[in-house]
Image 1 (tube, rainbow, N blue to C red):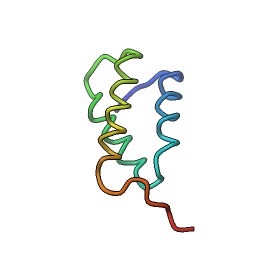
Image 2: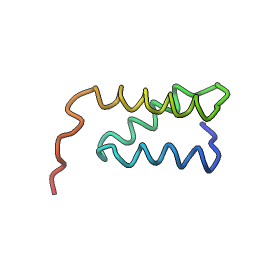
Image 3: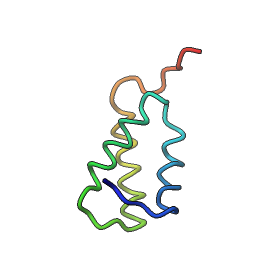
Image 4: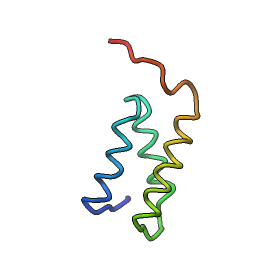
Length: 68
């Protein structure tokens, strides 16, 4: 389990919101995996979240519009 402060959670949620819905779970799971067992500083979390976001978006067609 990844434990975040309210501020850290807010930063992750800001990135999460711009992802297509079908990529959000993958992003959160991969970020938790990458951060597991590490001391989390503000810069570390921001950098790892951005790296994870790029990795998740790079898989498949991330910006395909969702059906209504």
